[in-house]
Picture 1 (cartoon, each protein chain N blue to C red):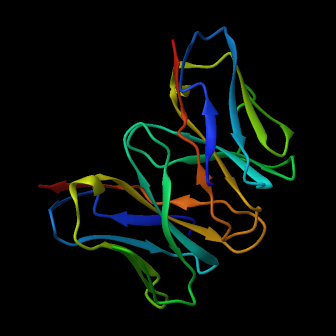
Picture 2: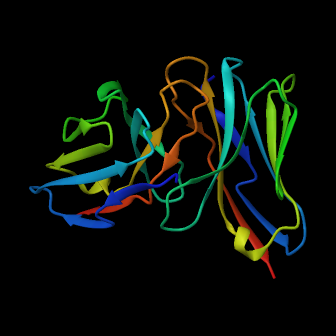
Length: 113
Length: 114
């Protein structure tokens, strides 16, 4: 119940295309869902996050879609660029005073020029 | 400014050495975290400090000893490590320990145990 399942494991997209990464969870106590981007040798960087009372959140080329009933959320990267090539992690945390992030297994995105 | 700094960037140590990792943030955050990340895996939580007090220890072996000298600094003391402890050690901070507070990560310390 503590897991967050992420797919696909790897993704190749052409420049200008849309990258889509999916995550699913079981624990309905999760109330915060961030996405992180990590380049090799660097720490994860917070991209965008959503709460379950919102079905979609957009920041620039990045959009989170959230389906509470299906317990799924996804990251869409519009107009993907080679500079977006990185590993993406979804995560979730449970409500309350323990800001413990449960991470998905990660998606390695390669955007081809 | 959402910067978390970590030193050193790289560390090589023998199994009998004692070393320390340092983390600093000046965002006024009151929660700080240590994570361990192995290659091609997600970060795994090790410790959480809230208001300079240890609030979560994820059953980490005692050869890892955290310390929070003040609200801006977090240390991780290492002693008698094993080769399997080689990993990227990440520090993070957030405004508070409540769910939903954004966690900002540092660049990490790449640790190699020989």
